[in-house]
Length: 350
Length: 183
Image (cartoon, rainbow over all chains, first blue to last red; front, side, top):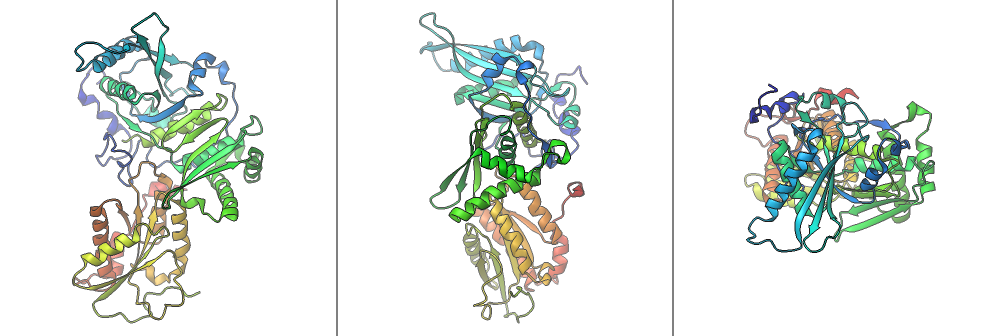
C-alpha cells in the first residue's frame, strides 16, 4: 500500500477514522453555511469537559526566540487543514522552490509583459522546532513570502506569513492516520487574501489536502476567557475585554471590560486551586461567564446570553469569533495553540 | 400558576391549534404565515408566545393547544435557557406526542456544537422529536411549516389515517447516540 501513489490511497484515511461519514465533506464553504446539522468531524462529538489550567512555561528555552517573535504581535486568520499526504519536513527547500514558481506563474497569468513593482517573490519554508508537545505532534512549519523590488537592491520586504501547526493534538486520532499522512490541522495566515489563496491552492494540489475556515465558537471563547483570567496572578493580564453582538435591529455591539483583579477574584471564588490537580472543568467556565453576565444584567438589564460572544481579549492575546487571533505574549502560547488545534480537529470533516 | 394542559378543553371541529414558543421572535411570525398559507383543508390557528407560562387573562378564550413547538436559536444561549425554563409549565400529558423542538441556525459554521447536543439531549429526555429548520430562505421556512403541519394534523386528530400522536412520537422522537450519554 505504501508504494502506490494514486488517488486510491486518499480515501483510505476516511475509512480509518472510527465514525461513519454521511458523504458530505471536502466542500469549500459559501461563507459560513456549509455544515449539516449533526455534522461528523474527525473527533466526532468528543468534546472535552475539562482541561489543564494554563501554566507559564519558559517556552524560549525550547523554541528559538527569534522564530517565536515572528508568531507574536501579528493578527492571524485561522483555517483548518486536513492531513497532508506525503509531506516531509526534510523537503522544505524543494517546497520553497516549487511554491515560488507556482506563485510567480499564477501572478503572471494573462500578463504579456511583466509590469509592476512586485515582480519577484521569494518563499521560504522553515521548521519551528520545539513547538510540538507530544510525540505525535508534527513540527510546526513556517512560511514566509518576501517580495523582491525590481528597482534598486533594497532588502526583501515580507509581504505574507503563515504557519501550520499541531500542539497537543488528539493522540488517538493522530495515531490512526496512515503513515504517509502528516497532520498539521491549524493554519494561521497573515497577509493579502490573494497570496493566502495561492498558498492554499498549492498545498491542496501538492499534498492532496483541503482547507476550510475555522470559527471560534462561544465555548472556545469562554474557555479562553477563563484560562487567561487564571493566569493573572503569575502574569498580569492588564484587562479582560469581552465583546458581544446583540441580535437587535439595528444590531448592538457591547464591549465589556473587566478589571483584571475583579475578574480573577471571581474566577478564584469559583475555581479552587487544590481541586482535581489543576484541571478546570467546563462547568466552572460556564459559572464564571454566568457571573459576569449576571453582573452586567444587574446594571443594564440586558441578557448577554441572548447575544453572540464575538471577541475575548487580554494582554496575553485576543481571539475573534470569525477566526482571528493575536498572540500577545509567548508565555502561554501552548495553552492557546492546544485549544485551537483541538478546534481545528473538531472542524475537520471526516 | 396554572399548567398548560392538552385535554381540559373541548376541541372545535376541523380545527387545529399550534403554539410556537420562541424568545427572540425572529422566526415564529414568518413560520406562522407559512403554516397558515399552506393549510387548505382544516382551520389552523397559530398562537405565538415568547415563553411559558402563558398569561392568565386570556386563558378562558384560548383554544385547546394541540402542538407546542419550542424554537431554539442555536446561536444564543438565552433561547435555550428560556426553553428549558418553559418546559416545566406544561402538563405531562403534552409529552405524549404534543411537543416538538425546532432548532435554527444549525448549519452555521460558528455554531457551538455543545448547544446542539444539549438540545438533542433535552428533546431525547422528553421523548420529543427534534426538527432542524432553515430560517433564512423561503423554501426552508415552507419546508419547516409543512413538517410541523404533518405533526400538527396527527396530534390534533385530523389525520385520515389512524395514527395517534403517541404512536407518531414513538417513531419520530429524538434519540441521542449511546456513546454521547456516557457522562
